[in-house]
View 1 (cartoon, rainbow, N blue to C red):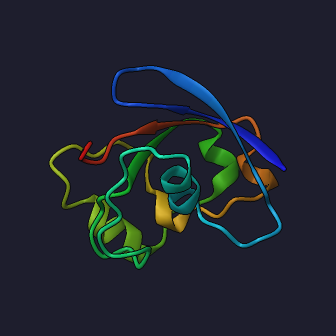
View 2: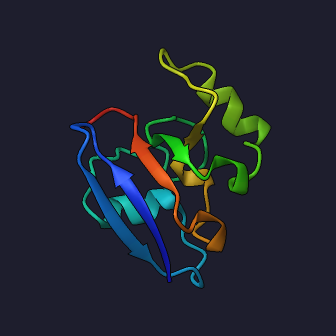
Length: 106
């Protein structure tokens, strides 16, 4: 199990614990935890509605893929630590990270 913190749109932080042996993405865990993540494209890096900012732990997660960067760069609000939650796999690399929701809160 991996523990990380999620900050919602109101700035409220909650620690989440997720299995790291099932191949799940951060997007899937956020949706299962009932955060307002649209994830319109279903995890294919085509819509950017699962936009998050990695406040702590971004160095451990590696670089974003070209497809991910293409989507992020088209957002009106984009940060150097922005990622698409669908492209971040739940793994020990996420341990202790702080993730802030940035996508639309619908």
